[in-house]
Length: 408
Ligand SMILES: [Fe+2]
Image (tube, rainbow, N blue to C red):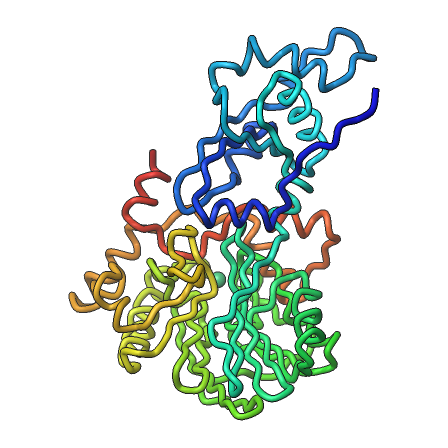
């Protein structure tokens, strides 16, 4: 029998469907714990069925074709959970098992496709969006949608500065090559806890300095310093890229060494201090009571910037935080009107501290080791790196709705 070509969605196609709010159902065949830890989320909830592969599969004998076994099992085990018509996307960890599941579904007449590369590929997918693209300045927001991580390339003339580079540094070297930019500096706004920074590796590759605030070069649990050389990124450190200036502001709270660079006096890269819908959590160093007041003061400093300053955060929690263009950005003045965390600043420090302390979620265990990797205290291979980074970031303070969902 000639094998039929299995329709696949690449991670980029999945992102487009999530962004456009397309109607489809996900059949995720990973184990329950993997599924609970991390699932595909869109702007609106995507109908999702989790049926672990081994619960779905009931091989008659070891030589039975897997797709045939799936087709035999579906009517009894899944039929009432799947839409009779409409697109189904089969998903597994790496995209192999789900191919057989999608094939089994197609034999039964379902409109099924496979997510190419599975959750691993989805987790490592990047999207590039221009925040500004003028002859004077190109500012790119590079997102890693599955994890909610945002990084930036700020370019003018033939130079570019990279801020908060993610682990797959070829994303940035490829963009620099395509656009004829020389990477002149690599900065991290802070010691990242939720993902492995690509900053140090990218700086080495580009043959330039890696910049970090010295406070964030010390692991907050181990109290051990970074094992690699870096340049001190401090309040008032200035960079020039082509015709544009970048000035570091030290705004502690989420970490002690948090830097929020101002770009061209018009954009502020707020790191994990301020997000589009939330504020950074002050507890990842284990000292929420003492760090929350720092966050309060840092947010007040941000609020004093001109209202048309555009906020560009280092994370998002949900795709619905994107604006009409799909970018995660907002003028400060617009945020002030509806942002719960910012509006609370008016009520003073005690109210802000009790608000933040009431919304802390458990500290993901992997974050300790991720910070060890990011300070050079621990080396991991690709498999371990992916395992540590599993799931969406938890750098933001839980909001009302999210806190309720988490508690449920
Ligand atoms: Fe963070």
